[in-house]
Image 1 (spheres, rainbow, N blue to C red):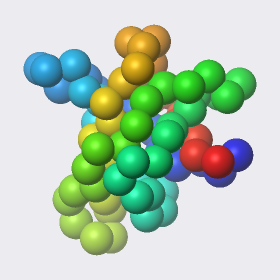
Image 2: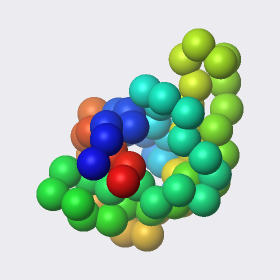
Image 3: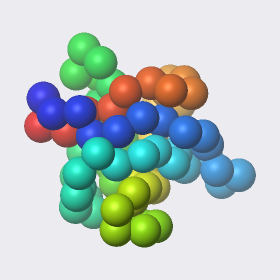
Image 4: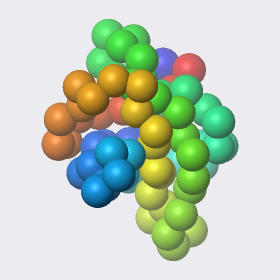
Length: 71
């Protein structure tokens, strides 16, 4: 698994915002440490040099500064 970023915060409607270490496509599944499924990327946004991911979580178990991963 490849590190994709770090959880920053939850939005008002329950989605997650995270940093992005590299380009991650919409629809990509993301995981927490130990391959625990977190959710799906629904949008990549922000500046090209420092993008962010908007993630629709399947479970609300991510904490601030948790690392997220992709396969």
